[in-house]
Image 1: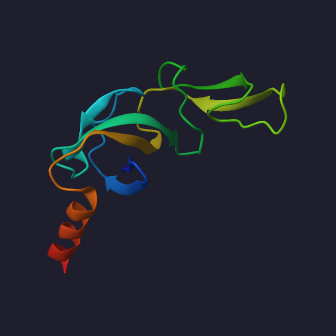
Image 2: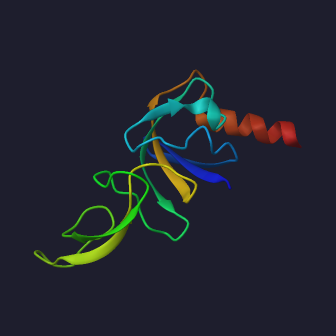
Image 3: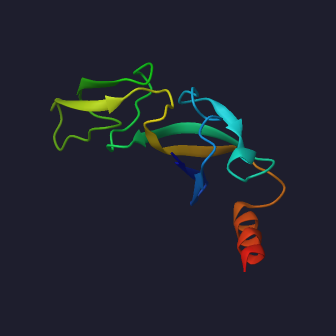
Length: 127
């Protein structure tokens, strides 16, 4: 199983695919990890969310790896069209497990090279 890691830095987003799932298992939304796992040496990334294999979003206030049906008034997982509307939606817990497919992250500490330079250097080596 592989993770898709979406890295956001200011107005740029980049997507990486990694097979090293054990390094990220057990981390919770808000935790930071070394960007070297994704191939961004010198970077520190903070987990901001994600989604599982069925598309259910991770929610920070649901502990563990479970899926629950929660009554939502807005925020992550539900955006009502009118004020005061509530709806019961399924959301995923805040802990990364084998069922998670996509992890959203934001850069908290940048390295010496920009992400575009690191990606560009990797593409030139392959050709």
